[in-house]
Image (cartoon, rainbow, N blue to C red):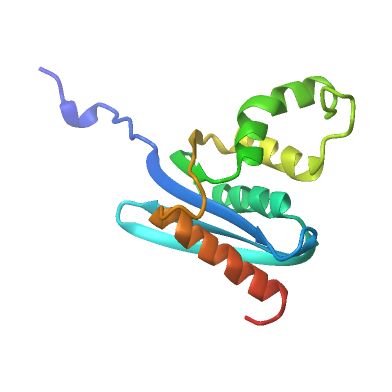
Length: 161
């Protein structure tokens, strides 16, 4: 006879759906980032901004801040409308790292500080991430909300919030 109550249970990582977006008024200029995180019927919105930045930096910051907001390893479906971030993290980063953070043309990788921060976060977090591209400004409700949050981030950077 076995005592099933004494058997350890293995809990599955929590599944989180994330939508991220970045915005910039001028490139460079004041910028903002936003993210919508949803899990188990609960949603959380986060956003921020800074002056003198670029759209690509804000797109990356949105992803970094969203993943950093997760307090334990999760299974993540992450939607983003930035091909730069998607290809950078799923294709290009391996070569950049192998070449000492240089491109195939031997130029320094742009936004290397953020790429290194994102890379370190992915290594240390234990998250399993399914990266999914979504066309921006095309009616996807999650992407539209992330875009609105990114624009709130611009307003915050400008001191209007």
